[in-house]
Image 1 (cartoon, helix red, strand yellow):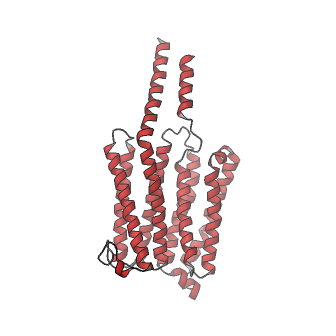
Image 2: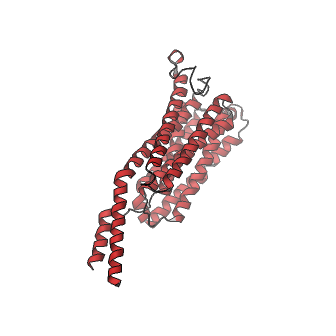
Length: 324
């Protein structure tokens, strides 16, 4: 009787693994691909938004959501109008893509995990809020707090999208390593705060005023000081991973990218100040690095820190148990 019960448990385990594999092959790949496109589109959206701000093109289109009353304002097209128009176009495409994923999750709700439609509904809500802030940015004539909120919501969209992708990848994590996630969360939070200060710095013209007249330097000095705890926390994370060895071996690509982005970000910040913020390429690169920094930290937080066992290996283990 005990043998039969054990055999039944083994068979149920194999059935679960096969069903899980079928679920992945039919639905998971679609959501993962759409999620990857969403991440790229969101990073592009953040960078283009930064370029729009740097080039003082935020009000190049005086109305919203159209630009000079049309979808494609050929008669008014120049670099600034193009940046603002393209920023809105990318935002529209991101919103459409997220709406499409939400619709698919509702259609396939009986075939996918319960958390997926709920999380996509959160994404859709953030998109609506983001669009509202975009409209307020134009209506309020680039109010500093509105611009800052607009960027932070974009980062929340990026973080949520990446977390969904990683949870789809790692639906069977056995060792989440809570301490490792908390360790990574600290520089992520600091980077978000640093980005908040950075947007306030550019949207209030505090950096130019400080560099030109040595006044209102508090925001600039705070922005520079925040680089130190971020750098120390990243170095500590990498040192911890090297000490654990297995962590570094499984995540070395992401950790190496973090190290590269850290030194690149510091260099771009220094170059921006050395050129008195007159070189847009340095400031835009600074924004791009911040987006990639947040993306990699979020990926490390939510991904499986160790390689998962494949389906074949699991099935083999179950068969060995049955045979024994």
